[in-house]
Image (tube, rainbow over all chains, first blue to last red; front, top):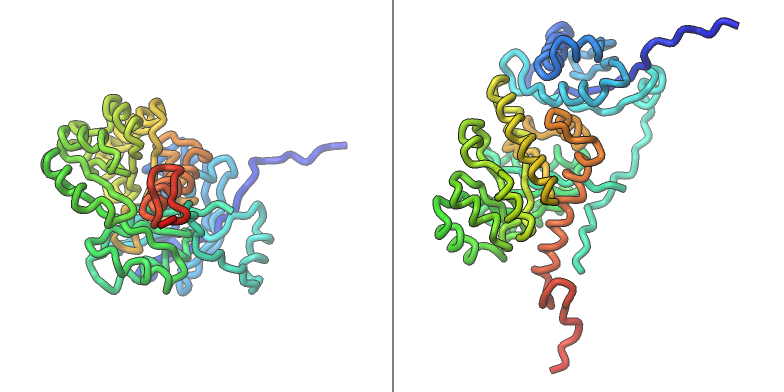
Amino acid sequence: MKMAARGVRRRYLSFQILSEGRFKEKVVEEAIMRGILTLYGMKGLSQANPQLIEYDAEEKKGILRCSHTQLRQVRASLAYITNLEGLSTSINVKRVSGTLRALRRRQTQSFTRPTPSTTSISVP
Amino acid sequence: MVKYIDLHLKKPAKSDELRSMLTHAKRLGFGAVGLASSDPHNLRDIGRGFDIDVVTRVDLRPESGRELLRLLSNLRWRYEVVAVECTKKEVARQSAKDHRVDILNFSPSPITRMKVWFDRQEASLASEAGCALEINISDILRAEPFQCAKLISVVRAEIDNARRKDVPVVVSSGADSPMLMRGPREIVALLDLLSVEEEAGREMISQNPLMIVERNRGKMAPGFVAPGVRVVEDGR
């Protein structure tokens, strides 16, 4: 029986952009690539193999795919971005999943997790 | 459940940004934040309104060892966390020796940092006094790429020195606006640049700051006599 050839496993990250401006998909994609290139170079960029799967310019939300072995590096690169088109910006990763379907399902689910209460720092 | 703490939020330039910073910190997943302010009294009440614990903090920037001692004797027990930004070698040595100092900070400029930094002697002194080394992520985010690379190389050596002498390392955002704040997982991911493993990185943003805050809140609690000794009942 022939086994299906398995490529590198992928991770899908949903992210939210916090900024005053609105940006086109191309701008966001280039910024992410540049971020990875700056921090990890050509080798890192090729290993991460990032691809912007979808992006909503109105909501400033998107989904990025990357190699599972470079997830931490991609996260760091997204955190490293501080401006887009001259405007102060930060990118927060909301959720990570191994499949696109699971990520989208969790995003559309409208359950609210109970928010943890204030840190109970004990005073002896 | 792990509680993440961002122990260094600076007072923002615009006063209305403080509330948005606290909201954003809660949304990012922090259970507590350290707020540097000249007025500690109202901070805890502000934090309660946003369901986030606010730790009062003061950032000292003395010019000499003598000035540091004077500031510490006046301010120490008004704040839960005392941090010293060491811009001179004399100040760095004095701070590292002093038990009243919780956190040591160094200049974000790589040129200054190469002259006054957390070297091995500093680490030995800090280890005996129980001080922690703080790394502000905003220093890395603000620097231009070439400066950033130099800064990262110095900070990496500092973390190495701290680990050799079992000095706790605390990682904070050092943000003065919501745009410079990052979530706990993003901060741990950025520590990859400093060759810090994920598990150790998580400790730097949770257990290490928590230890400092709990220790000092214990000391400031009524009835405190010495570590592990409290007045339970006054027999008079």
